[in-house]
Image (cartoon, rainbow, N blue to C red; front, side):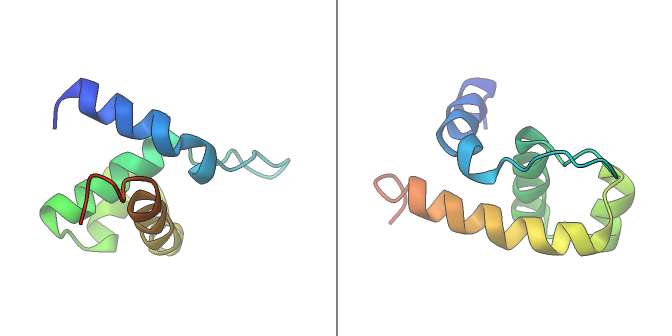
Length: 81
């Protein structure tokens, strides 16, 4: 995936996958959420492996991937059949 393609996809879905920071912790950014999902889809790595790579808990990754995939399907329906 080229950088331009990545930025296009990110711009298309960032509003729907963005989360707010809390007093307890900073939210995983939309960019990180998309990168984690694309890495998982491209490599099939385990959540535990992704946890160490991105420094995000595996339980959070377990929530991020289906959420981002659903938004990708919804927003890119014209491109992906």
